[in-house]
Image: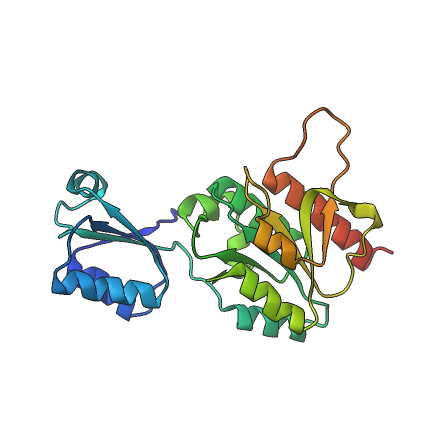
Length: 247
């Protein structure tokens, strides 16, 4: 079955999408357009904390499938997001300590899809991504997850730092992937844990890293200094599985 990301064009259609509660990943608006209907759309977009991009008419015409965009085009997620509270509730009811992936700025849809697949296979309860500066649940992500997205919930949060702070108060510990961290075999990765994986180029951001309880590294025997984000996520995830379930 083909998986499609919904493209919504026209002011009334876009406004209705927001008001109906549809998960909209990004919104393109004609740069400089400030009339009443567009301001209303922007207000609804901000309530959902949707990413807004201001572009030229030429760019909108290029994106448009209908030629009747009226200065606004929205893209809704291919899959619906799950509230983090619901993921945590399900984790608590599972009989196993919560195990979640937190992704800090993953922009490559293939990496996100591969990480979701790994998280599901490793028994994680869910994946958490930020609303800005990160890829959403696009068709490419869904295809790359090889079906895992049908079973593993993904939450989208406004602020990873605040989310981590809140979950730490509930007893969750956070380990982030960092080349300068303690070798993963020496770290205690049992119990309620959040595994934080950074972006492909920059790694885990400074503010997020500061909130993590410890930094863990993967032994590197070659001359390159890092692994692909999805590969690193897989290696660390299965060290967590080993410590939690096979000791």
